[in-house]
Amino acid sequence: MPIIYCIEDDESIRDLVIYALKKNGYEAKGYESGQVLYDNPEPDLILLDIMLPGDDGYTILKKLKASHKTSDIPVIMLTSKTNEFDKVKGLDLGADDYIEKPFGVMELISRIKAVLRRTTNSKTSLDRICVSNLCIDNGKHVVTVGDQEITLTYKEYELLYYLMKNKGLVVSRDKLINQVWGYDFEGESRTVDVHIRTLRLKIGQAGKLIQTIRSVGYKLEE
Image 1: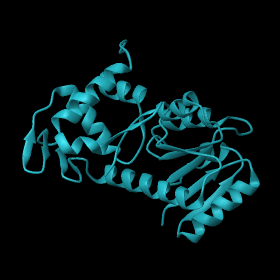
Image 2: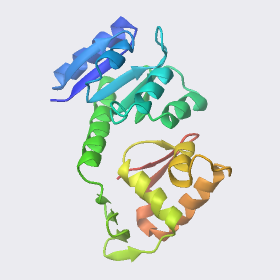
Image 3: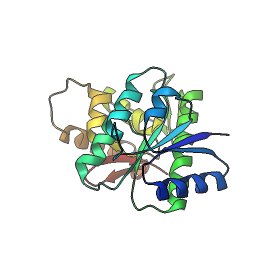
Image 4: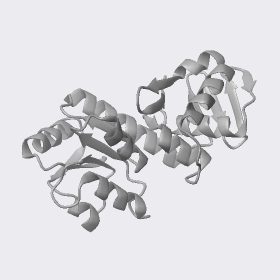
């Protein structure tokens, strides 16, 4: 049974989340600060508020991702901040998803399932990933749409592979640049948009699987 920590200083929100998680079969624990994550980092997933006493959510996330003991723990940010900068900042620091407050319980559970499904799959095998009729075999470095093999450039392949192994999750343009082009890339985020455009053209009808998330980035989803 997955163990989920909810780090939220608002007791009413924290209690609601814990109740919903337990009703849906998860083992859940709630805390008002992130100190527990430094002392006892054992959960399978973390719901992390941004505005917290002591270290804020961004600081906690950065520390978690910097440690080899906790870097693989998936994190969903809970935020009342709705501007583009705050959303992108969390994703760039390594968050797997973000949920804006106020949020519905069913949406929360759905997003948790999606993140757990993605991270569980990534721990078992990322050699072959399929979404609808679009498949990527990373062992053979082959992309197919149905029975047709698609020829991609190196960057197009890496971009598609990163989107597919994070299927169902929003990935910011900056995160794509860091992962595909490298942290020292000095070009513009428009580079990502251009590559996405040519990638969509090359994979034909499967191109509709790559969704544009306005002001943030992209998501590959069936």
